[in-house]
Length: 146
Image 1: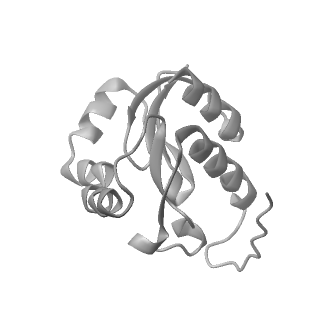
Image 2: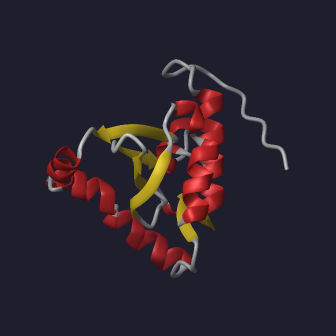
């Protein structure tokens, strides 16, 4: 997980934290991590988002016991669809949306893929930085380069 911490700090450093420990990950590459300030943050690659979810361990425990949080975190239906369409994950691999929800991608089987965990963190952080100042509904032109 050291590689993932390094990638988080590289890709998402523009958010102003220093990740020190991975607390949890899920099959879609969502990551909960602690910072050097003992804050808890969550990256949701499918939503191109990264935000603080708790300021302390007790607040984190309270949040993660909430049934709505658990359902959102586990993504059970989407994971089951991805497994049936794409098979099991290999080591250091995660499911993903081929086109992120924030740029029009749908939560459906035709938009599901697999990607290396490190690439997913890098891509989501890079895209997040590029779109951070856009207004909701603002039109964009997406250029993909190899």
